[in-house]
Length: 234
Image (cartoon, rainbow, N blue to C red):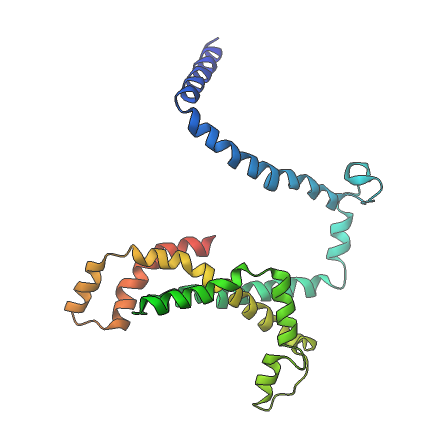
């Protein structure tokens, strides 16, 4: 009986809160719908991994096979190669890709000309808004045997053959193209964090005789560190 009264009290408080903050709850509805439709509803399709899927029968009509698909993959010839490639690409992307927007934000922050700064920001942001299909097509053309990048390296004596035909060049091409596409957009967060650093700290550093490099090491980077740690974890 006591538990029932507690539940009734809870629902009464909830109804009263909804009545008082109706507009806030209405604003939450689109967010909940977004996550349900695009994040939770598609997860139902994950059960296809445990079925012998037949398009004609659909996901639910296809027979269950348990871990058969996983066992087949783990025992396949390509498992070790796939795992290795995944780890190599992920680690290379973190080592080279994560510091890139930080460095770009620091460099943009040092530009005194407002017009030039906006120009650099616009140019570096633009690749983010290019379709990934278009980017892949551009990269394929640039690194082909007659591509712009291949011809550039040909000036230094490198053979003018398609770079994508060489397996050892796939990871550098993949990682560097991803950095080129996202570095500008990713730097926005760090540029915003830079504006939140207390300018009095820079003034104090200048009084102590710190140059631009010392200011970066002792003021800018410590000020950015909370943002860097959060984004690295994410």
